Amino acid sequence: MVIDKNARVILEFGLTWKSLYALHHEKYLARPVTIGTDLFPEQFLDSLLGKKTGDEVTYSLGPGEAESSYREDYVLHMARDDFRECNSCRAITPQFGRFYPWGFLRNLSGVFPQDVRPFRVIGIEGNSFIADLNHPLATYPIELSIKVVKVSEKSPGRGGRVVSWIEEATGNGPGMQARWQGRQTDFSSPMKYSRKDETVDSTFYMLPRLTGHVDSRASKFIQEVYAEGLNTGHHVLDLMSSVQSHLPCDMDLSVTGLGLNREELASNPRLKSFVIHDLNQNPVLPFPDRSFHTVLCSLSVEYLIDPLSVFNEVARVLMPGGRFFVSFSNRWFPPKTTCLWTELHEFERAGLVLDYFLSSGAFIDLQTFSARNWKRPEDDPHYPEVLTSDPVYVVWGRRRA
Image (cartoon, rainbow, N blue to C red; front, side, top):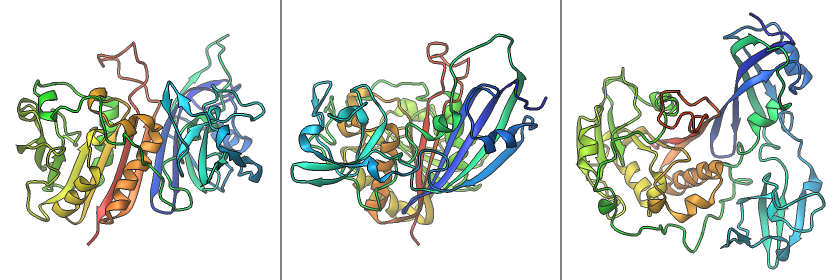
């Protein structure tokens, strides 16, 4: 079956773009797409017609061609009083490089408190600030791919909302992980690395949690990204490890786990050995210099209270050219998550992790990856209460020689 104007299809969008310090890859699953009624730029629609499952089309797009073009009149000089200071009774002040919802801005025609479109603070001058309301990707050229995942006939009489799928794929996040014009984002906060539960972590993790922390579709994405930096026989360090290492099952690796719960680590089938060690009590890794080809930190970076020290230690134990992968989603243990992490947009969190890599000065060839809007596997314990798979974000870099 091929795509015609009566078809319903599932499409996988891929975006690749480059900021000053990193290469970025985004994946978004559009489902279901009604070809005859949903919105596509004409050039995209014409190239999709006649395609079948497995086909892929690619485009090289200039700045603004995939989303709204950059507008000078969207850069606004505003008084400090025009910024809403309270969100759910938490005081918020504008910080350089950070993103906030348009609804945080007062006195703008047509903008209401519920408006979640992101704007960026690109300047702070005394009692005023500069708000850039342009799309975060507005100044970047993009390589866009659209892969046909499934084609079916449109159900007779079936309706629904009309969707602009290019906006869905590029909106609500991509671009927010990049620094503004290469300048470091101000991630400072009085409560930056404080947590609701400040007891020693070993106490919190005393009882084993023998379960995965993302669904199997999300875990597969993490495995696929990790596999890019692995070869058979590699020595791998799995930081803050648990019952899963999210590593490819068919690759022969020597994996060392470092974590807090002995029963969880002993239940992890990928670990050849493990060490009980609390990085928040002592960020120094108990391994010699240049011990590992690859280091992983899966779904745990949000718990670190001294992340830069840990990143520096990772650089020490990595072999030159070795890669450090950091993955995360939007699920965590709330009592042990740092306050800063919970304040950030999901894509801003990728920017924060990039900041850790850049601040260490030990890593090059930085990259990020995101995957969103896949269907949650039906055998997952949270299905059908949650129908969408956990989003996946990965940031990685290579140790300088």
